[in-house]
Amino acid sequence: MAKPSLRQLDIFAQMAAAGSIARCAGDLGIGVEEVARDITALEMRLGYKLFDDLHGTARLTQAGRKTAQAMTLLEQDSSEQAPAAKESPPENLRPPLAGTARRSVTLGAPPPVFGHFQEALAAFEEANEDVAITLDLHILLAAQAREALGEGKIDIAYFYALGEPPDLPSRYGWSEPLSLYAGSTHPLAQQDMVSFREIEAAPMLAMEPRNGLRQISEDALQRGGITPGMPALESDNLFEIMTALRQGLGWFAAFGPMARDMGRVEGIRRLALETPLPAIEIRQAVGPRAAETPAVEALADYLFL
Image (cartoon, rainbow, N blue to C red; front, side, top):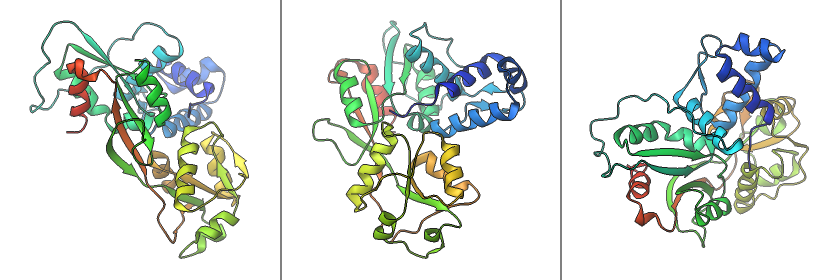
């Protein structure tokens, strides 16, 4: 699974408690720049902002509060934190679900996918006061979704796939193109068009072998006709990857928020491939007993509105 480093999580927790980057740096005995770099790396991994005005009051964003709650539940098995303040929901939301018992619905999703519909989740909770949504940010691939749904650990799963898995009924949400990146001075980045054979002959940079993002990226590469070789670098440290790219050490495959961030980094360029690679699908699946729980079906359908 693609997990942020323990260091990044520790700094995130300290930042949330300290309320300012200067105080956090002082408490940890490190520089402000080091704190900012680790928080930025964590936000790149998750695909959304955790703090408003990092160098000012450093207030948690709505997504940051939800992430802090999810990490507390998953890593420490502690009680839920206070719910985040939410904006008023749109007027066209459905009325609150019937019943007075507060129903907890657990949503499993990759962190960047949670970032995609965090506002919709907040609006749903606001409109349905009898429903509390908790998150499991460890779900990435179909196998993990299947296991968690089957064991009743989650009610709704979003996961990365290349089409519908044969043993997990699901519906298509959206697609994210897989792109390849290299340093702007790399020979491949200088070409108007790059063939798959040229890609295979060049060194690859990759995330750690157990990282789910690497697994789905390599599956898409192989399905598209590229057989990756032994990586020249394996690292879950995105700044290390970006440094190696700018140094011309190889190419790197990315999709979603990570790809968007790569495309904005000075000295890194998206390669112009002769043929597009298969896109990564984001799919939704629900638990086998979802029909018995109106809140689960209502949330699953609402996220598709």
